Amino acid sequence: MAPKKSQRPLSPHLSIYKFPLTMMLSIIHRITGSALYFGTALLVWWLVALAMGGQAFATVTWFMQSPIGLFILVGYTWAMFHHMFGGIKHFIWDFGKGFELESVDFVAKIAVIIPVILTIIVWAVGLSLV
Amino acid sequence: MSNNSNHDMRTPLSKVRGLGSAKDGTSHFWRQRLTGLANIPLALFFIYCIASVAGKSHADTLAFVANPIIAILLLLFVLSGVYHMKLGMQVIIEDYIHGEKIKILALILNLFFAAFIGMACVFSILKISFGG
Ligand code: HEM
Image (tube, rainbow over the protein chains, first blue to last red):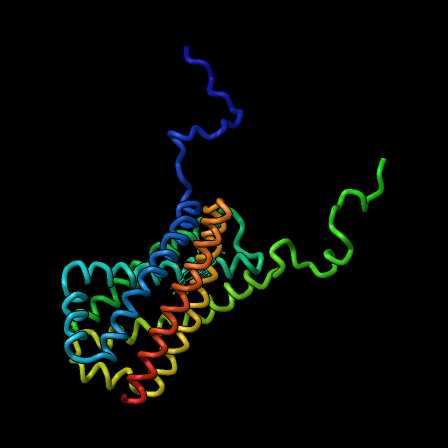
């Protein structure tokens, strides 16, 4: 007969360690922050081209409406919403609230789902205007 | 046995000031929160702008950005965003880059990048607004 499983806690085995959602989100907040950071170069390109004239603006518009451009823009929208809700989560924690295990998990799930929904809404509206 | 004060290497003055080894206390943390807070409405406004000009002609987009209300809010978004992202990237650099020379170089490049992005955006928005 197999010996009864020990009730003692195990230290994490790194190769099979399951990343808790909260930990993933902490990393993703940093990644989305960095993506937003470098993505501001696109904002500069767009604004400077707009100020320069029709020719430069046509190039930017061509890029933004290409498949790669659209992919980046949708990704940027998602990163913005995701980072925003990650930030709001930080603000809640800063007030010393929301540290209980259940509420941490619940808030984490909300902070994953709502940004996805908002991104879909914005692009459904945005693309229908084009 | 030792008395309590011997456990702490800090001078009384440094304890009173509470500024820590980076000499700026909690100000970095606080500004990151403050700009983050400002970013919430401003980023929502920015996304609204992008959706509004999607597919518009050059002339129509110019007219949209030139509207004073739009231009002022865009400028606020750029200023708050650029300050916030400079602070944020500084933390990332300090966390991951440990060589003293390369770290200082990265911190300088971070500052230059943020300054360039901010100035380029501000100049463009003002030029568009003033119709030059
Ligand atoms: C939309 C509203 C935003 C909110 C509420 C927000 C909030 C925050 C907060 C609270 C932090 C600190 C996280 C921590 O201490 O670990 C942070 C970090 C950061 N943010 Fe934002 N932010 C916003 C927008 C932006 C934008 C537009 C950018 C870039 C253009 C940006 C770039 C960054 C970066 C690079 C970090 C550092 C990430 C890290 O240390 O892990 N954020 N943000």
